[in-house]
Image (cartoon, rainbow, N blue to C red; front, side, top):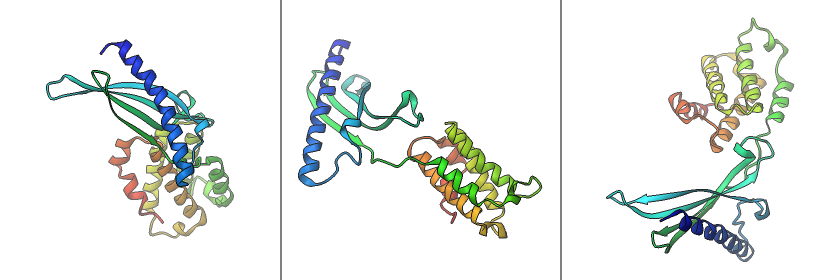
Length: 222
């Protein structure tokens, strides 16, 4: 299968996705179900991602997948090329260009994390004494503030490091009075929301999180 044939199948797939969108719009009206999962069709940006060849047991090409990415414009400048991935459309053809199957997946729309709102809320309730370097809570405040600044700077992979250090601190003092402090309680809630936002959007170092059992530990926090 040469590049001319592949490009022909790519162009056909790019046309077919619009037909699929037409059908999803029709179903959304008839069945009163949002087939676009909270997104608007007119906001979608369709980009060709890649060709994928499936090999049989003898290592010979058996069929090809044409994969299109479904994106939204990234106004927060988090994603590469300022395109947020929200789905994909795949068509499958055999080597004789005969259609085999198609798949579409559109992720549900999620609200943005709102890091600035979290920072403001936490700063409004932090005791002044926690800013003193000679108190033990200062360590925790530094970890929380590092997660905020790293998130704002789009250095997401390092955020997991300070989530882990924050959990270390909470586990170290779990039997002590400071855990009842409103700031500690709110910061613990913040860590939960932060971690799952990063995880859902593939912005964590999975191997690091698994090594330190971050998800398992964060589930135990009130």
